[in-house]
Amino acid sequence: MAVGMAEDLGSRGYQAYYGFAMKAVGYLALLGLARFLYRLYQVRTTVRKAGREPGVFLIPHSFLFGHLIAITKLAIKLKSPPTLHGQMMPLMLAREYPEVMEAGVVYMDVWPISPPMLTVFRPDMMAQFTQDQSQPKHPYVVREMKPFTGAMDLVSSDGQEWKVGRSMFNPGFALKNLLSLVPAFVEEALVFRKRLGDLADKEETVKMEMYTTDLTVDIIGRAVLGARIEAQKKPVKFMNAMVGQIAMLYFDNDLQKMLNPLVPIRHWIYNRTFHDEMMPYIQDTVRNYEKMEGPKTILALALKSYVTEVDASARGNIPPAFLNRVVNHIKMFLFAGHDTTATTLAYAYYELSRNPDKLALLRAELDDVLGKDPEQAADQIAADPALLNQLPYTLGVVKETLRLWPVVGTVRAGLPGFTLLDPETGVRYPTGGFVLFGCSKAAHVNPNFWPEPEAFLPERFTTRDESDPLHPVKNAFRPWEMGPRNCIGQELASLELRLVLALTVREFDMTPAYSESSLSFQGEKAFQVQLKEMITAHPNEGMPMTIRRT
Image 1 (tube, rainbow, N blue to C red):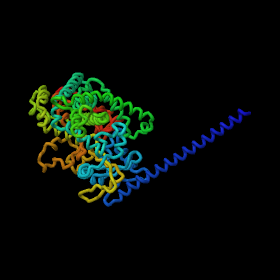
Image 2: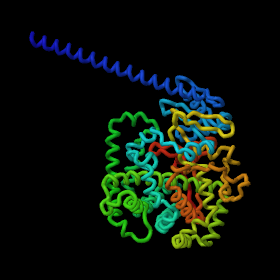
Image 3: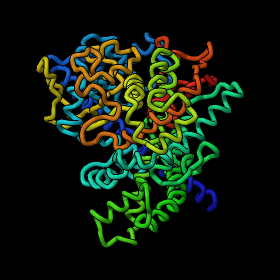
Image 4: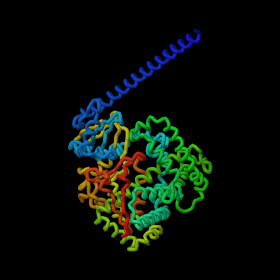
């Protein structure tokens, strides 16, 4: 009997505990729902209030679904592939709604998938929040980059943190210093050229972006660390850790990742792996940067700058906390420095294959400057890196590729009271409560600023005559963004792209090799896609190509 009473009391206790727990869960659910509904009301009213400003055009907006319905309908209408990169949507909206194209701005509300956004692709208005008044990075970006670099890098940091970092690394990214590193870059480019030759001999079809990525990893390794990474010959542990970690960031709004309890642990493991792999390079530079003769790496000049301008007492004894920050900066340099350049190089080969007349002009310039024997070009450039500055048409090819295929835009924070002004109509666009997205993709093919916007015309960037219709409008070309927060690595990217083109385009023909079954978007099989493991835009299917000797 006593046992039965104990069991009965235990059962009642369990029921009471269960009832209490269920009530708690219910209250929490109600609280969560209330917060969700309040935030929905807040976002939707902010968007509609902006849409009521005189002259502002708002695409069809649902109070419950925001712009999701309008955007989904447009994606279905245009048969948008599921992998299409998100930076294409503002351009799609501009082509669908003449009012958006004419204004060069569009409000986009897809909350709760992402914060409400004011997308801008009119150059003079993009300048207002990047050049005239450089707005801070949006907290959304800072939050997403926190696990990757602690948000202590030149992309996501702000204020004094950013100023100190930019000042410290500027000397290493200066053109004069980069030119001194060109002989090292030539060594890596020759490995790439040999790989292309092997592929041509085998008549294989390959994903060109894989090969250009290995190359740009090797070049950024030489520039930053002064080391031969040899990514073109073997897997690189710290690069694999870095790419694996990027795949866990939430930019693609993957609930499976966001709710996975193991994600923080995996971030810790990847961070530790990258840190441990990187520290020997850094410590070697700390020991030897003052003794180095000849060309200086970006890391060596950063350490020198730190000792000279920040903490003279640190000479020979760099604080560990500072070295940890250097690791974060290097991680971002390695990511941004290899990813965007590799994609651009693949697209340059693609455009040259589609425009044989432009390829002929490029080859003619290389013959004139470097001589008619391509085999001699590497030695000539290594002996006189300034030759790369005597290739205006080659530079035009690089810039025109970046115009048509920019890989990323800029994301800033809108502020209450800060508005963007249309200088022609006087319309003001409120920014408070919005992400400001400078969409280079849409800006670069905006027909109001670029004649023949879809055509590949390197001549846009070789003409000096400002009255020439092809001459770029002020502020219109912005693949690296503009203003104080422009890309610190743009000179490095431009230099290595010119170098690699100079050493390859006269010896090889690269032909796109998409299959009949390959997805296409508006007739373009090489459309830009969003990869799970990358934030930036990449060519569909990695740019399949067949390489042949000329």
